[in-house]
Length: 195
Image (tube, rainbow, N blue to C red; front, side):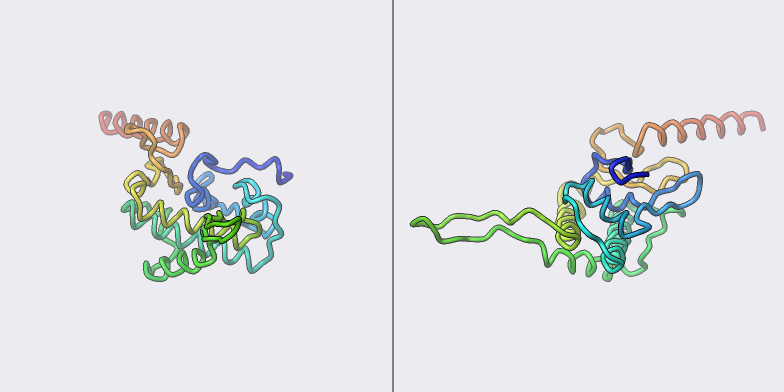
């Protein structure tokens, strides 16, 4: 499949959730959408970071950040799904990984020019490190800000995805997971009634 033909999981979610969801379950088997450096470059392009060249070290960094984010999301949401077992055992290490990427996040700066002071916004992110820094910065806001209470682990059978709850009745990452959950609940109810 060509990079521009890719369909990433839940592309409307915030960047950190989108990165976490590059590890997903497909027919009961975990699938890693970041299998190669080219996959990472395609994901970054789909996330709005333009065309970048990614190498093996970049891929390792992205997977480590993803694992840290999934570990922290499991902590924040109380996620106990066996299939979504946190990839890092140490919460402190997960925080350190997120912070290590955040350090390179460009920030607004004060500039003297044109007879006065002005605020200069950071340059747009280009490159893998800038992209991962932006994901890390957004993750800090998501995991420790007001949106943390809206972060959810999907309740669908065998699903390992996360989402930000945008409606009070939303329980699943997608309609498909909701349908599977309702069908499983219906099956259990009728099986138990027949027993």
